[in-house]
Each structure stands twice: as structure tokens, then as C-alpha cells.
Amino acid sequence: MNFFLETLQVTFLSIYYLLEAFVKLFIPARRKNVTGEIVLITGAGSGIGRLMALEFSKLGVTLVLWDINQEGSQETARLAKKEGASRVHCYVCDCSNKTEVYRVADQVKREVGDVSILINNAGIVTGKKFMESPDSLIEKTVEVNTMAHFWTYKAFLPAMMASNHGHLVSVASSAGLIGVNGLSRFLYNNCSYINISCIGSFYLKDYCASKFAAVGFAESVGLEMLASGKDGIKTTIVCPYFINTGMFDGCYTKWPRLLPILDPNYAARKIVDAILKEEVYLVMPRSLNLIFALKNIVPVKMGLILGIYFGAFNFMDHFRGHIKSD
Image 1 (cartoon, rainbow, N blue to C red):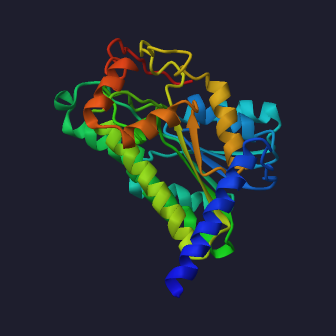
Image 2 (cartoon, rainbow, N blue to C red):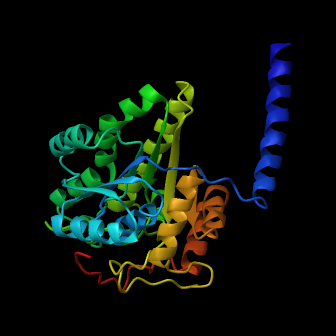
């Protein structure tokens, strides 16, 4: 009897949630009010991190900007205040260093308060072939793109759990859902982390591995919060295609109408909008959802043919990129 009742319940709820999702395609979701929230953005000194800060500056939040580049984060703060932000705090933090993350996090809690919206945005990318990448650079990729998320969550999640209120945001990548060819050329220096987002072929490299891990970690923590009854803590996982921040100059997209390189301002607005609507996943552009679905259902050999068709094996062929501090 229990089996019958549980099956009936699952069937009913499945139909209900499918209909709910269909209705939401036509009815815009309500945006939550974040006035007074403390928003921490890592990698805020340039690129998407800076643009997200500018979007949030219009919403009455307190901004906490982390970056390894002090000048970059201070410039972001200046621009945010120009956009209307009244409280902006800048901190120099090397997100690859666990000790430093914990130290700066404690400083933020003492000087600003408990962070209620945490946006893990800092990232680095490589572009060499896997076997040509020094071990130290592979380790740095994982430390920044993955392990930093562990340390920031451990630092700020306890306060969110105590109040059953908060939002965890992982700016990951499409490369965290499907493997990428050629993402092993290192784009990191001692000035600034680089905000990047890419997808490519079906070969796994250090960058893809780090982003797969970031997505899996964010998903598992989100589920743990629900299982623990902390349904007031929301999770948003962002998986965009190439974003035109200048860090991927030379990258190639075979079908720009199907897979366009994203405008940074558009991407930042979409991410903030997804946070305000409490969307769990944001995939940009939407056409990527079809590619991800095909990856999971078609034979491997057919997937390779489709990869060639979409130009997935050649995205990084003419990659040159450059390092800058916006």
C-alpha cells in the first residue's frame, strides 16, 4: 500500500511541477527584494564581477568586493557608488589561499556583518594542451575555480543556516557541464583573477574538471540545505558560454546565431536577474540546453560528429587572450 501511495504522490507532484514550469515560461517570476542584504562578490575587480557589482549597486545592498587586485576593486567601488551604492567595502583576498580566505572572511564579519548573498565569481583559465601545463598551474586552476568555493561556503554558510536565510551563487561555466578542448593556457598573474566562461569539445582538461567540480559542489550543498530543512537558503548555478570580456580574444564560434559570444553587460544583467528570481540554474544562451540534452542521450560516436558540426573541437584554435586589470 505504501508503494502505491508513494507512486501516486510522485506522479501527481511530477505532473504539477511540470505544469508549473510550463506556466512560468509565460508568466515572469517575481523578483525578490534584496534591499539591506550584504552581497559579497569574489573577482570583483574586473569583468563580470565588476558588472554584477554595478547591477547590485542599484538595489540598495551593501557590497563587499573581493579581488587580488586592489586597484581593480577600488575602481569597481568608485563606479558602484556612482551608480547609487551607499555602502561598498573592498578587500584584497587571494581566493586560492584557504588561510587568507578565512582571515578576510572574519574581517568582513567584524567590519560589515554576516554575508547573505555570496557570489563565487573569481576564476582562472588555461589554454595549453593538458600535457604541456605545469603541475603548479593545474593546481592553481583547481584552487581558484573549485576549492575557493569550499572555503567561502565554510566561512559564510553557518550564519545563513542560523537564520535560514541566504543565497549561494556559483558563476561556473558551460565547461562545467560538458568537456572542453584546449582550455589549458594559463591566464593568471599576480594582479587579478580573470572572469571566464567557456564551452568546447568533449575532451576534459583542468579547467573543465574544476568547473565540473564547482557545479557538483554547488548542487550538493543546495540539496543538503533542503534536506536539512534550510529552505530559506537558495542556490543559483550559472553556466554561460563565451563572454566577451576580452579574456578569450580569438576564440571561435562556428554558429554565432545558435551559440553567440555573450555581451558582458547582458550576461551580468541575466545573472543578477536569475539571483533575484531565485533560479537554480542559468544556462546562457538557452540553445546550450539542447546540446547538453543530446550529450546525455546520443551514442558517443554521434556525439563526436555533433561536436565537429558545432565546431567544438576548434573553439580554442586561434585563442590568444590577454591579461588585463579592468
